[in-house]
Image 1: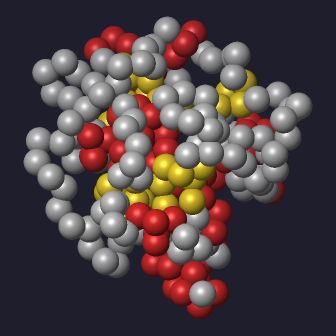
Image 2: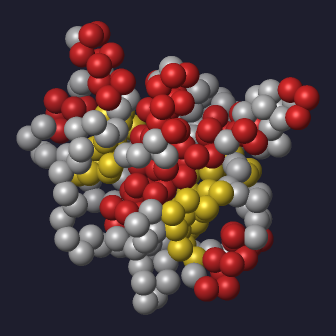
Amino acid sequence: MGAVTSPDAPQFVLPLVVRIEKDAPPARTDALETAARAVLTLLSDERAGAGTGEGGEDGEWAQAVRDWQDSRIRKVVRRARGAEWRKASALPGITVTGERAEVRVFPPVPLDGWPKELVKLQVSGTDLDDPKAPAEPDPALPVLWMSPELQMSAGKAMAQAGHGAQLAWWGLDDDARAAWRKAGFALAVRTADPAHWPELAASGLPVVRDAGFTEIAPGSCTVVADHPALRNRSVQRG
């Protein structure tokens, strides 16, 4: 899923690495929220923008971001700890922290061209739990509502939350983007109430439909991005 679907174009992927130490793993919701904020942080970084470099040139990551967004906005989450995390942290990228979660996002890379420091990291088996049920989200916050109908590993869900945040970002005007950035990209990730999910999915808010590469069927609705600014627009359209 991307700005322009170009099936024949070279495929790029956005790498995210979550730090999972054996004795101190983050809570699942914390990791999902941190991954979503990491994607937004990269998208808003001047290195990723057109004409944001010195002398009005593109930022150093701008072409890679364009190549990625012109195809599918594919994201892959891997996990690291100890020396693996330190090596990953030395590569160009941005580390975003949550309550305990740490997620490092890197500029997009070709699907078959991962840096050697990342290619060996595990992608499967990234599972996390919430020690207690997350609190009800603040109504003023953007909320990424996860499907109550799908079972996903933590890594898969982190990628989907990142997709939802990105679709919300694309839907906002410059003022709304600036306000969200100023707020540190505050957001919540929650699993929707099964009774309300059909209404959310049909609300006109941005919906993530999975490409079906891993874990779930193609076209599955995984996330609804409920940003207040977009919520107001969807009500007006309705």
